[in-house]
Length: 212
Image (tube, rainbow, N blue to C red; front, side):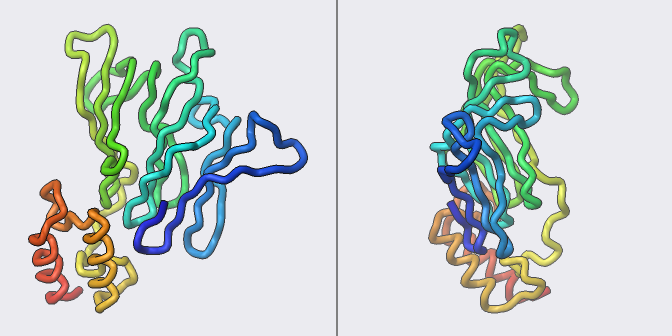
């Protein structure tokens, strides 16, 4: 999976000494001219033991953040043996974290921790370009047992110059091409109204002509 700015996330099968069926799959990222490991089967992430072959393609936003589902064993599973599904978020620095998972506790702002029995997330539009992830959850042992939650992958400030769409440091014609590339790919919701449409082009061009 890739975005319009050269960030690429992909799954790989590796071989060599010490590699077997418990650790042979890995998620790699190519960003800023460097290849690095994001997550490997058999590793531990936030207490989860990752058992995934990473068959789901990551969703990648314009700043190089990503989300994808994995299978693993939850640290909150009383038996610590059942395979569960978790959602992994990767920030723009390449650091992965578990966002939510089946049979796992979740911390919610202004609320007590809840035990998640299942969650659902869009296969294509779960991650916005400003790092927000939207997903639905089902809880156990609570009066209100369902909710739609928002998770912010990073708390970085918004781009001080929205016309600089590709974050190059200046607003020029390459930003128009970067925006149109995202728009034609269906991820050009510049006015943040929940859909990519012609009015997003007018909204972007309006700020682009203002410059930085």
